Length: 164
Length: 104
Image 1: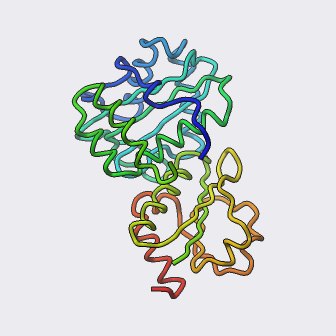
Image 2: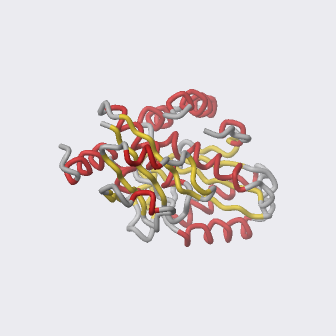
Image 3: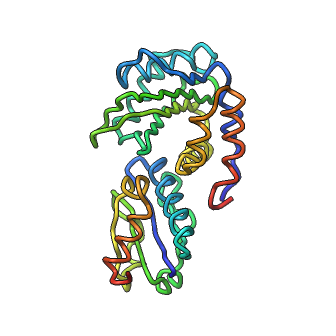
């Protein structure tokens, strides 16, 4: 596989993780909340503008990925720096899609700067998506108690990838 | 068994890669050889050669949009599946494909 210019573990920050999402009743609130984490971490300039980019992407096809995973994402000039917000909900949050959706428990929201090359952008998403196929990785994410645990899970998960 | 597959989805990113990874994992677990071509936003990755396609026991398209360069597969029976199913249960997709191809 290609070299990855951007590592997931480098773009997830302590302030963009919430391992115990509570009081969020639907997908809109969920995305709003995760965008707020990115905004407060200085990753996006405008919550509204980035939200629009995420909605545009959602309209292209579902980002609910089976196994209780959702990977909403958006590429926008409102993104100052590539970032990933990760939210975990043990009871799950209903994630509506054109295929009916599912209960999302592991949610990764990716913020991609407009000037980032398509290849780099796709590589980050692809790597995360491929990691999430592995049950061992998902279990590590469910078992993570701290930010460091999540980063360790991502770093170790890379050895699970079929092509690496 | 030698399997070749290709994955492709409307968004061209996440489902395509997840389905490819899931198929590789399931094939390896079943003791099969597999090569998966990815047709995504970056174009064709890990492209299947004519030889590889013709030498395969089983050919699977896991796509919910039109396949690029489909003419390469003319001489082969192609089993079709959808990315969501491959992500949810790649093992079942492979088993079903083998049955449909009369290999199981």
